[in-house]
Length: 146
Image (cartoon, rainbow, N blue to C red; front, side):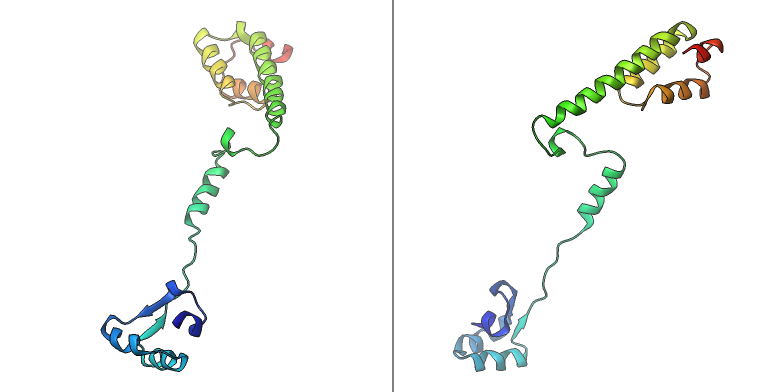
């Protein structure tokens, strides 16, 4: 009855443990209002939902995380277009690496090949820029040909 009088849910009604006997005697809405004015019955504040978890998730998404298979929406065939574009990119990168392989150390080649496979490079141009900036190519002519 207190919830109805105070226009809130039963879970938000607080009853003073010291005045349980008085509260038990209250049988009308007027009795409840009187006890509310005396402070024996109070309405608890509304609980909100914290935004901290969603903020944390958003931070991670900005870093590129949380984009795994379980987080993707769309048709079951939607992943095929993602896969086709990945195949197109990785084949181009590996083809480019094959062309410049002669002008690289074996160790450097393996390192760059692994990075290509992990999605480090966006395109052929990005791969070549990376190799040039980090001085991983021995021949300067190879850059012009490829």
